[in-house]
Length: 217
Image (cartoon, rainbow, N blue to C red; front, side, top):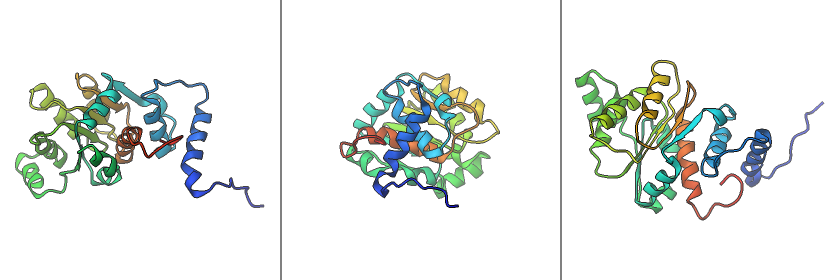
């Protein structure tokens, strides 16, 4: 016997998905600014643990939106995250998305300094003379490097999205970012990923995009 499928038009699938997420969250309440981000991450992952794991510090959402309005650029630690971020909306405010992980000079610096490409790419990003949002979904070493540069006064990010996934130094690196005075959105624990980093960026951008309305915005 065939399972009964829900009939949903293609353009309505995202809206219906967000309705289901809202239904399953039940009575859970989130600050208005944070709710679209939590729901978009759940939409991306189908994982309701993010309703508890996502942490927002120092008025992170407002800080991020203000930075984007001023033309902030987003730096990612994977090409996957870079590919997934809505560049059209970011470009409308004058921003760009960068990922330096594949750059020859980054590979050279990592080899020379006996470190990771993620570490070297954060060093390269620090030399950009632009307001920066960092979206880290893979490499805890990127978060550790950002923490060190913040402590040294070498960089002042507008926002750090700290959501690397894995086991080695992942939890600790996220907690280090939460200790800083930099606005941050962090997925506490082991969960995360490049798709989560991109989803958080897009949730912020979609909230600022006048062409998007309704559930799933």
